[in-house]
Length: 398
Image (cartoon, rainbow, N blue to C red; front, side, top):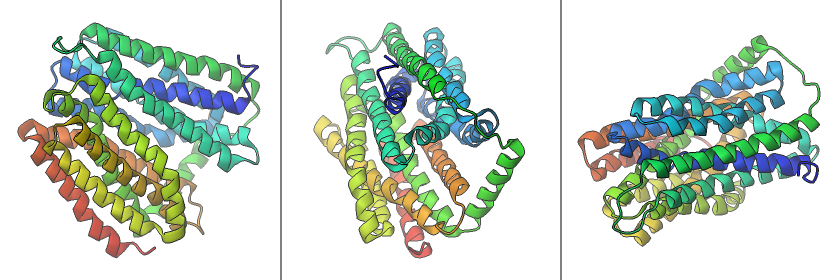
């Protein structure tokens, strides 16, 4: 099979199965598994957010490691984590062990994510823009399929008891199978395409990292724009953790419908993001970011008011559209601001900031939900998002 596939097609297939594996292990399976283990709201939020915390700490060191041992070897390390860690969930019968496994599992995307795009760029030659776009789209499809597939596995017939331990183990076993497929395919394509790579050493990587941080922190426009995506990602993380819980325990939907709610939001984001990117190129970044923040805030606040599947789907669609507005324009605006500088490491720091937001979302929401209901908790996070809008409008010149 490896001989039939071109190196680029094989890399896309690797990315698809890796992201499918990770998404299948995440939402809605993870929050519902934590609930099954007896976790409360704050504990569920922590379980969902802890893997993103791993990324915050290890994404940049992973880049430094790739400078020393090469991008292909570093990518394989990440894929080994993708392949091995899902099977460790089969031994989980305690919430604390789940947290440890989630933290280690987060190394998969922390190591693989920053390096995989560089490997694709090596293969792409003069078609880097086109090939990187296709690679990103294929991996997003893997993410997209994971949520409804996980919900389908956990779904029981009407009137039956909730998911059993065996159902969760089935989901994580299939996650492991997908991870193994990505590793096996990668072993062939990376070996065939291996070549000597320049090793700059950790000292040089550390110097570039510190230079990037200083560059970002010296320009408030970059910091504030990055923070807007971070705050928007905070609501994404909260929905990722608690939309399935709300859908099943409050709205009375089944697990498959809970997975579809998350999936429809991702579909809208994927379908509209290229269009929004072209729109921001033509009409400017700030209007889209501002509109996107408002759309996300309004739809996020409305979710606890709804219980009907179709109304919740409509809210998810609006949220996905708002996310598309923000994510298609915020990174581009940072690139515009840093156009005359070496902004590679600045963009890396940009990624760290929105990872912080994504990790904080489920944790903050969990603590709020522990003592208050969904409406109050979501209203507080909505207020934070809306208060950030005028700060962005009046402090960032586009």
